[in-house]
Length: 289
Image (cartoon, rainbow, N blue to C red; front, side):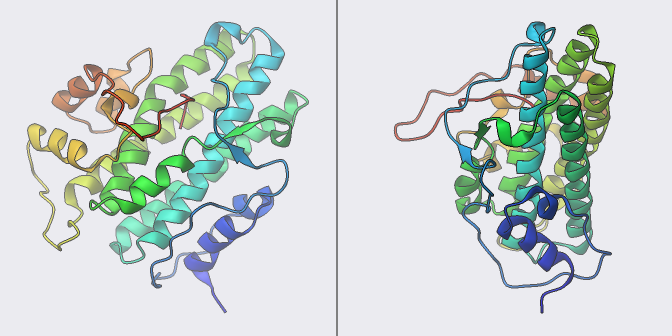
């Protein structure tokens, strides 16, 4: 019978109900199994993902309660996808260093808490996640991450240094919008998530720097700023890029708090979308990770 982290991750991906996906992790015990690649997580009726979902309401629209509920549902679902993808990564690369495994489980636990907090705020607006159309925006990047020769470094660049780095901008923007709309409780959740996201970005930047590559060569623990940019650009899987690692209101201080160098911060600030490659998907929904 499976126990521990492996069973926990398998449950998140194999069961479609929210209770199973948000059940807390077990006490830590050393984790080892054969690599497991899951194409898509199980989802119960009402939680199915689909492409082409409409974008987030703009911050100025949050005076409308329905727009606030839509934002909260999207934010909760972003967190749910993150929960699933961290479980996916732990099973995809089960031979990661023990300290990194433990860090991934801790981040997964925080993503579960974020999801619960947003779901509580959604319920306070008289709505449920199952009443909203749910995007597959995060999950549609999983095949490119899984196929990348960068291995787990592609996951770190995609999740931590792109999607979650972008949330360093989106989180405070929507926090302030909720506050301006008189919804201080939702603003407080956005602030809580924002503080945790700083740590998630710091974790990704650290392990991208020190994790051995797929050949077994050690990472460069004290590489310079130019190498930090090169590591990201070499490992981030298309169509994700530095241009997708930011929002409209660029938050330099949060990035510095996450340990990103000024050179890398400026690289992200100045990034522009690359021309679309034939046959490659484009993002249809932007927003917090």
